[in-house]
Length: 506
Image (tube, rainbow, N blue to C red; front, side, top):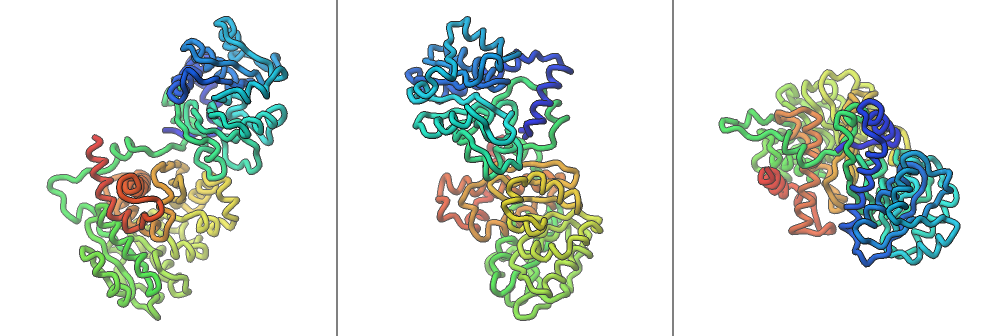
């Protein structure tokens, strides 16, 4: 499923009409009818429906929705929230078709408040993706009125007032219960400060060819079908060497569990051989947690790794570093050594990211892939911006950083964004608030390590790792746990259910 900005969506409509010859009126008909069918699944014929129609495509969609509902014997009226001279083009044609079919259009200045108050269902087709800056009147007052009512609110494409793009800090918008998105999800669906305005959401197709999306956007949502197509299957004569020899470096006496969870998650996710590297006291504490792993002690002072690893880093197919590593000066030298010496993909997480802010120039010199897995606080530190600034434009910040330092960025969050150095971005939809707990990131890093060593592209490996991690939490919360009691170790144990579910779903 592709993800678009407002500009990309407008460009797609233009290409569909100019290059392919799809009629704009037909696309509007497709959009309105597709939305109407979704609406019918949410409401009853006894409901009083008020559709608020603005100018442009969003208003035109509103008139098609109204006609379709009217044809199916729903009680529907249209409140036109802009003057007649603003209704032009395809929207004008569909308005008149609706009126000729017996539909009623009420001007905004003749009873808008009463219509809104009397409605059981409000369908917001006022602005759509065309918003730039603050909403003006009468939209501002209408939005306040809609939000004050107890009616069921359905928005068309985007809730009016919500920017379709990232970066809009101040806005006044409709709080929808349900949003029916046209064509493709807009960026703001996935942003922490705008996502809640959408409520529940679904996407409907209007008949735009796939090649247009591929031409104009490099952003997609990674879905179960993508996992099934790309996740490698085990072959009959496979052996442990076929599935990677991985190294996990981290752990200190204060945080031994971080290393343990990454090691366990990597093995549970299909890695052939995993070695945990840490101080001897840490290894003694955790070795019993995962007897299938190998462990190698490295020089340490007071339980923290000390400068030189004294390990042959060339012997591994991928290396993960940082989990429970600590933030001492000596551990920074360990991170530097791995970045400079390793001849394989390196995954950097947790305390490794803390040290990375002082080692960024070394990333550009690497001949092998580097993957970073920051949460927003860690990413903001690497960028030198506030968390607030980062969360306003996570797609752009991740893309810029990835290109500047030639790294893959796995920016963790409710919707984790995976970015390649080439600018391709994938959004992971799985996961729930139960993952908001210490250790979840360590588990993800272990899964990433395992996936990177399987026979799939690096981008697909990262996307599949994120999907598996989140899906494990989703299955566990659905069947065994709540979002309150879920632990990171539960997520590790749930990985087997994920693989079974993926296999059984065809």
